[in-house]
Length: 209
Image 1 (cartoon, rainbow, N blue to C red):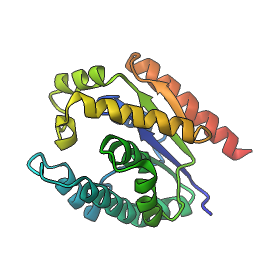
Image 2: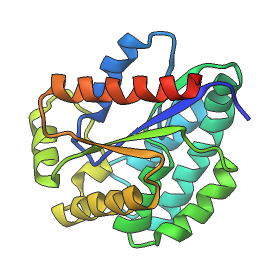
Image 3: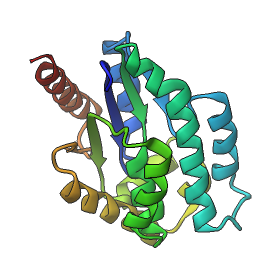
């Protein structure tokens, strides 16, 4: 049982979730801001292996296991202590990314990848997940125009892969409607930011009741 609140930001590549998270962090400057894979030293080292563009030979199961390993370390070293201290944690990606990317898009099976991650997270799920939805073509176009953005191995996958990622997220929306809230990420930055802020403030008000 934790006293804090755990909020995750999810979405296909190019949805703008990282930009929105940065904007939200200015509003909640007391929150712990982190990301997956990464957030702490060991997990950042695993991130480099997972996302390195030259690691094209990586087996999908290896990929899924590496994400779960990074997630476990990040959870124990950064997320769980913050929540136990009563803090808000805002995290760029969490377990839903593995379910959509490796479970569905890679074809490993959502339930199979969920089983791997249950071992890693021990039932510690977000209180709220905000899913930023965008057509894959639009998301990839944003990536190509953003010269300062990190281009990683997953960004280089074909359009069909990114379409499957989005389809996977939509399956998760149906599976976890009490936790995941969808936002249309195709709107302006200000529109998406305001909607995100509204969702978070509503959740905070519910938690304080």
